[in-house]
Image 1: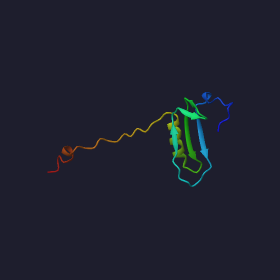
Image 2: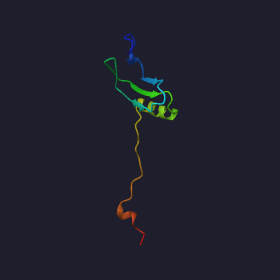
Image 3: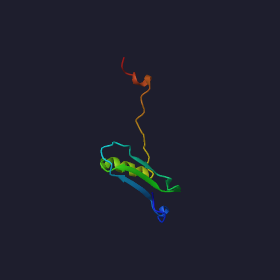
Image 4: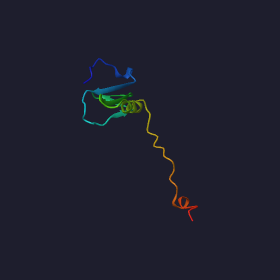
Length: 87
C-alpha cells in the first residue's frame, strides 16, 4: 500500500515491476485513471514481471503514456475482386 504522504498527482505514472519470475503473468498498461489506496489519480500505470523481454515492457509503458494499438490491417479483397482475372 502507498504511504499517505505521497502525492501521486505530481507524477506522470506509476510502474510496478515485480520480482515474480517464470509465471507468465499478463503485462498491463493503462493511461489512467489509476486508483491507489482508494483514491483516483489522472496518471498512467503499468505492471510487469522483471523477467519479461524489454520490448514487451516498453509496449506496456506506451499504453501508460496513452498510446493504443493501431490494429490497422490491409483491407481484405471482396470475393468479386479476388476472382477477377482468373478465368
